[in-house]
Image (cartoon, rainbow, N blue to C red; front, top):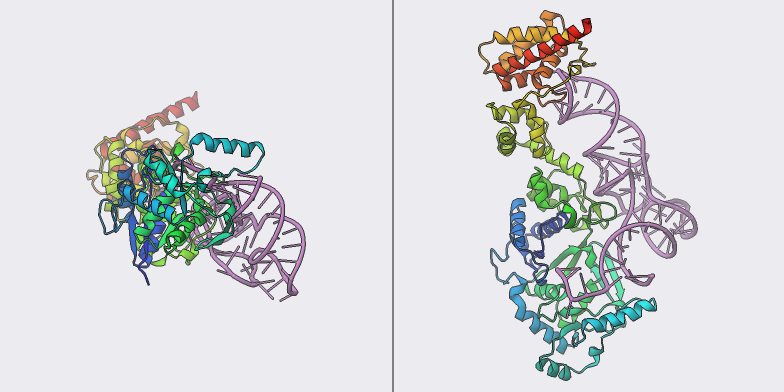
Length: 490
RNA sequence: GGCCCGUUGGUCAAGCGGUUAAGACAUCACCCUUUCACGGUGGUAACAUGGGUUCGAUUCCCGUACGGGUCACCA
């Protein structure tokens, strides 16, 4: 059996969005599952839409998620060049050949003539299909005019009879009536091929065995097959994949900042988590496993389990999955990722590793970190009502008692270096005061953080904040609660 | 509009003629617990619709509705 070869063929027109990346992933998985080759080809035949730096984004993205290509512009290979604009002469050659074979013809029509026909069609309410007068011109005459320097395009010639069918691996047999197939331009007047044409030539030249692409090509695939047939080339295996949607109506698009891979990284998502999540968009494994490494995906991936309907990109599930990745790491790895966010949010001299420790179980995306630890630098102003917690069964009076006892005990503590010491000390207080743990610890945590929710409890946070700051904040708490008493008595 | 494709809970989805129609996210409740979170347990929630075929349809066929795609010298 022939070695499987797939290609990712993006056009460098901006950043990589999630749908794009998922196509690349599927292409990679299909190839690697069969020990095949994954090739990167840059489709830059549209000079107008090309965006500076877009190619680098493609390289960076593939590298970040570990989709290493076996051949491509940067790594070379036996089928280069891998950038379409560098393959220009070849397309013209094949276009001429296709004309000779009867699969295409030269066209000298200008934009206006086509628009003219379109208007007529619209006015009588008929579907527009360009009827090219140049089709009837002899090749000799056409080539003569080209010699004269006339600008021209090469247009596909399609016999409007019969049907063309093909077997798609995902959608099954697709048939269309040749009658409705447009005779589209293959070679533009600027000498560049259109996507339609360049794609076919390159896929064939590069020995691509499995063509994987979005299902928007489903209805035009028969046209491509007609060209393959005219050349007498073997038609590749087609795998059309469903779209990744933003919502029920809209596909993910490059506009509006829709989930680009780069955006997600900036928001603190991990490349592996993103890749893992998108693998599950439009494809389902046989088992209930959801967390996969790339290698595991390679093993279990199968074309048969690609779905036919579009999948809405659900940021909530990605967020959950990202949290799973974060929690599965060892502390050091997590800390390495968290550190930039911590140093940005915390100026006080505290042990950042300890902060990471309490954060790891409570962080889904890294960008959540700053707001979680904002109380460390500065005690927020807070309302005394915070001291009242129904479930903890606290009152102002209890809170005040607890804080006073905590102050006394903690100020006597010499060695603050061990969290365990603080733990034992504070947990000795409730029984001494005949209170429940929560009744003592809730007020302490409230006093030293000023927030209703914090990562970590009183003990961990006291340890992180240090003796001086902890006592200072408890003092503030005591004063606030004493004011409360005064107010009540007045 | 013509043609192509799709339609299982809010979302991702399993299912491939007979099931109490999985599982995950989200959501709700409870448990754990020094808050939150993690973790655990449980709950709410779905086969677009009408006809066939069949002993039996979520599953097969046809129609309808809804959604998407395509009809570019864009990919």
